[in-house]
Length: 73
Image (cartoon, rainbow, N blue to C red):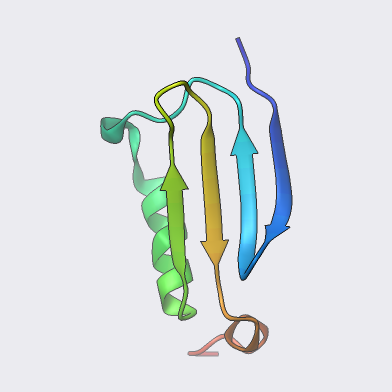
């Protein structure tokens, strides 16, 4: 069974939520680690929550000023 996903601007970030089965702690793989590292490089962070009942919410916080002019370019 597939879950439905939605995205929306969150205060200070972008939130993506789905109503699927969630992500078990051992399920965090390189894709999420790469997203977190990219956020850190831009001065932000990645927040991932998976409630017991299922579903997942991912919020990517990145300062707008840093996002418009990435460092190292």
